[in-house]
Amino acid sequence: MNLIDRYVTEVGKNLPLLKGREDIEKELKSTLEDMLEDRVEQTGRLRDEAMEIELLKEYGSPQKVAATYNPHPYLIGPRLFPFFLMVLKIVIPVLVTVLLVLTGIRAATDTPFMGMDFVNIVGKGLGGIVSAAITAFGNIVLVFVILERVLPDKEIGDFSDEKDWDPASLAKEPDPDTVKRSDLIAEIVFTFVGLAILNLFPEILGMSYFTEEKAFFIPMFSVEFFKFMPWINAIFLAEIVLDIYLLRSAIWTSVTRIAKIIIEAASIALAVIILRTPDIFGFTAESFQSVPNSSVNAEMLMKIFNFSFSIAIIIVIIVAGVEMAKAAFALLRVNYKRK
Amino acid sequence: MANTESLENVVLELRRGVIVLAVLSQLSSEQYGYSLLKLLSDQGLEVDQGTLYPLLRRLEAHGLLESVWKLEEARPRRYYIISAEGKKILPKLKKEWAGIVSVMAKVLA
Image 1 (cartoon, rainbow over the protein chains, first blue to last red):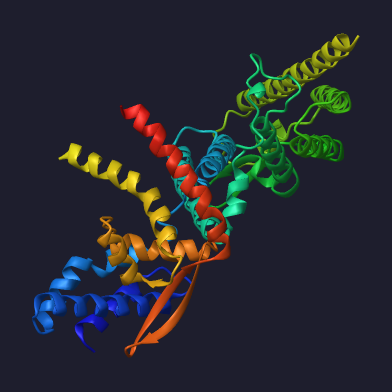
Image 2 (image 1 turned 45 degrees about the vertical axis):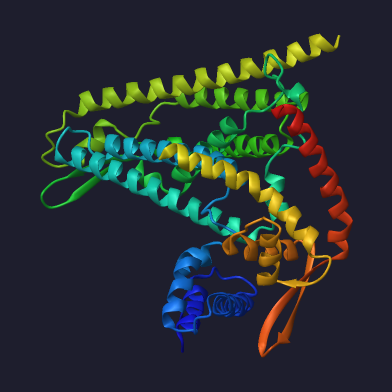
């Protein structure tokens, strides 16, 4: 194998995996031979290795030559990049928020005492969040790198809204009927996480207490609370269905606003009923008595947790009330305008 | 240093579009890569091999050129010629170029 052949093989090794790779190598060899022949004619010298080296030096390193054939010199090209950024901006904050909430729940329920366990849980939780965010980032990059290489150029072009974009959309005030996609996506994720925890992992909602011999677990909610689960599930599912519908339709209508008012009213009614139901809370004097040698000031803790729970339910009622009022106001305003 | 680099980049940008037109205009008769390079060079347009060969492949992929391998003097050569599609757009490109030249002449006067 002479120098030219070795050079062509080296270029071939560095070529991106594309059709006609052999063609490129064949054409390159033919070109180099032509150039050498030209030099022999022009200089009157005989072809030798020195002449080949001189030519190859001028032609450039095999890596550089191979790179000129790369149709995708980017990891993620300029056409997909805005879409990539959009996905990142949604996924990473939602993921970090959900994991922060879960870490907070674990830290609050597993260890009611400020001690090593608390530091451990929070430390591990934060470490987990960083690594989850990096993993998510890596996976998103991977998906886009693949999309960049498998999507035909025309399809990539469809991601940009250039053609459909209308300057009239730059209204002075945002259209109140347009749905906020980021809000909806966040709401779907949180509702889904809430559903999953309450139905599949209710055991993480509680307080763990360890003695030297045994671990004790006091659930946060009593059986009384879980009797409300079908109603809670129905409301959460209705919320998710409405959000998905809104994501698809991208616009609020009277029907969806009425549905939103009904769902929020149901949430408020259920929250009020739960708040007024006695013995809904798992942390009772009896449950603390099951823990031997407990140094826990049971009554004090019970009061703190009962109070926090009531506050949480009241916040739910206020938020649902605000959402309901917003939907009702928008409905009235639209109907008023039509008249 | 930075100024020289930016100047080179601007010159490269300027030439990039021109080369497509020059290549299409020279391929009414078939040429292989190196002969095309020399043909352009003889007329004063120096094109780097690293630019020309990938460009020929792209133009062929877009259906503006056709190519065929021929064995000549015991050496296989890939000959390129403008396609029917290329012939359709060449006059439009020439017209566009004439427009740019006349506008730029006014702008730079």
